Length: 435
Image (cartoon, rainbow, N blue to C red; front, side, top):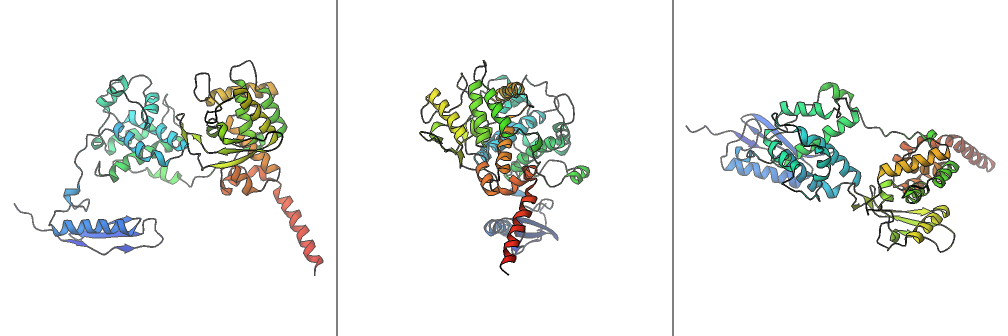
């Protein structure tokens, strides 16, 4: 039986200045209106032209989605695991190293949950396996136990639905022993999983977003993210940091390496991911005493591969005490210009855990509370601020914006109001003398 023709109207593009997606395409089917917003007029023109062509051909439109029925995606057999790897490969080059690590961590938790209800227990260490296998450069063996289990039990994208994903979302908020994770951590895992599947919707792998709506209670609790300020009161003074750095060398293999790494983090403010990717060619050290320069052009991407630093390349002055520390290390190591300065005996990057242990032994020996490698960077920032280095210069050396710097280290600025008052008062007195 022939269906009656549909009444389809396609209107002109609407411009809405000030909106994130200002160009809107509007059309109607049997009196029901639909719209789609785009960032550029070109994208909006393209979509409007596609709708007009479908209208002129007499195609049937789906009254629920508003789109021609021919546009509906066919059921896909791509699994959640395969799609997660494809999505990561698509976005990888645009992400900073820490973002890559965070996305992989979230998907390594999501993928084992998006499986058939009758799936048996997964192989041991599946999440650890996924933490390596999801990365674009991973060498995958399809015959491995983990790959065979994922191929057999992981759900296709087309079988995701609200009921299944509601349970997945609940379990993403739980730790390995069933305890509730911190709200920020659980929210991060859920956002990563949702973003990954939403991209499948955008590329027509699945017809609609299968995730259930966010519960109202969680939506009410959601607020603008606030940067946590560093508790500068617990950070060691310059004299304490010097004592800790001196105490790091011990009978432990590699302790000297961690001494130099800690010195770089404290005296130059480099991030740990930047320290482990330093090479001799990035150093400008004077032949005798004086200041040097460290050119920060690489950072660890989370997989022992060089990547661009989180906030881009920068150059950081190195004080004489650090120049001496670096000079003796380079003389001892005698590396090639392209070699990495810090490697283990097996040729791998030094791990955060081993660096933390070396710091813990040193702080205990020096009689101070324990520190993390990142605390050394925080101590560096507070030392510079306390010394009166201008905010803009401190931010530049750390690779921060001034806004981020102030938000993180507001405690180190205590007392600045008194200094400011004195300077303003002196300036006003000088002004009064000219009247």
